[in-house]
Amino acid sequence: MSSLRLGDTAPNFKATSTAGQIDFHEWLGESWGILFSHPADYTPVCTTELGTVAKYKTAFEERNVKVAALSVDGLESHQGWIKDINETQNTTVNFPLIADEDRKIAGLYDMIHPNADSKLTVRSVFVIGSDKKIKLTITYPASTGRNFDEILRVIDSLQLTAYHKVATPANWKQGEDVVVSPAIATEDIPDLFPKGHQVIKPYLRTTPQPNLN
Ligand code: BEZ
Image: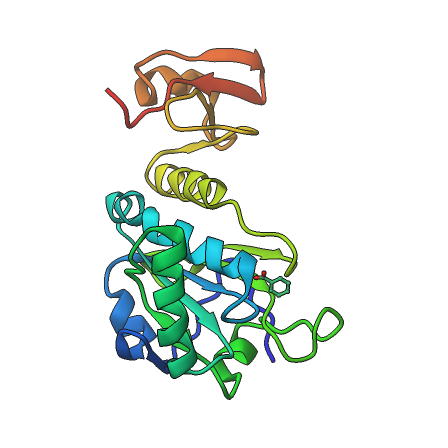
């Protein structure tokens, strides 16, 4: 059991999946990644979640993100369930489902929370950068399906703030103004952010999103 924190390297593993044998780091390559666990195959909320992720294929590709799902069910169970997901969610599952029957990966990523359920994985989400570092962790309970729009929104923020000296305010969405990093002196803002800026307080300076025309 390990507890992963932001900035840690996402542990590598080899696994059996519906897309064949995977070496996780090799499979990620230069891409960003999302590794997310679900409690069990053939369950209603999980069925809607995996169907939703399949429909977001283009959104993930646009952001150079590869997605893999995981549960402690076996490969045969995953393969059978995918047929149900495709049928009921009107989609085609287009990402690997990892079979973690021996709970090795669940242990590496601390996906089993014994006081919630001693055997099943909770709904964990790990966003992993192209440097293989963990950029985001979210844990949802079994009874709550995830909001994948929120996960895309955070990836947009992570990818923006990785390349520009900005941060994104509460409820920020693509196209909205961003906050200038506190490390930037106010007198340096015009050179760095030629689209303009507003000084609301000396520590709260905003500017239009810098990577849009
Ligand atoms: C579900 O995915 O529907 C689910 C899984 C485990 C517990 C409750 C709901």
